[in-house]
Amino acid sequence: MIEQKPDVLFHNFNSIGNKNYLLYVCKLVEKGFKQKIQPIYIQTNNQQQAEQLDKLLWTFKQDSFIPHTIVGSSDMDATPVQIGWNENQFHPAAAIVNLSEEIPISYLESKKIHE
Image 1: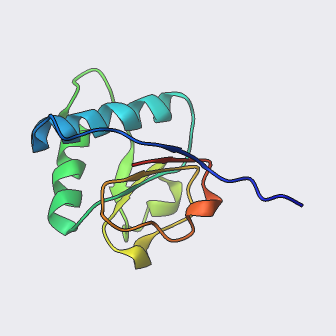
Image 2: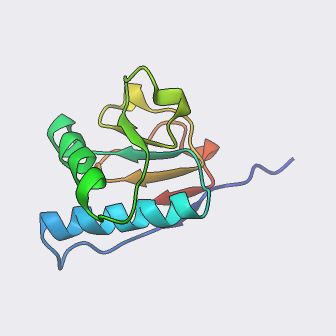
Image 3: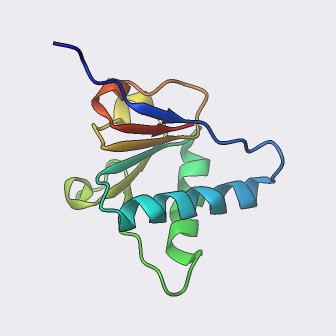
């Protein structure tokens, strides 16, 4: 049996600053959420970036709500969008948004990876 490999989509962030980069990530996650792609796991570089993204997902649009949590929260399993920064925090997801330099573990379990 041939194993299905995930689709990998590359995004070029070189021309935008950090805040615009994270806004782009929020819009990307919102699109996946609206398409009912769940769960979505966002792998960040570190805890600071995870917390920054967490705050931005609450505020980037007044007319939009994306249920999300930082990995380790008690309601994590019921939350469609999860944010982590450590490979030990990775949970299988339908889609991964990888903001880190590392390749997420278990990436083959995902249908889509955004780099």
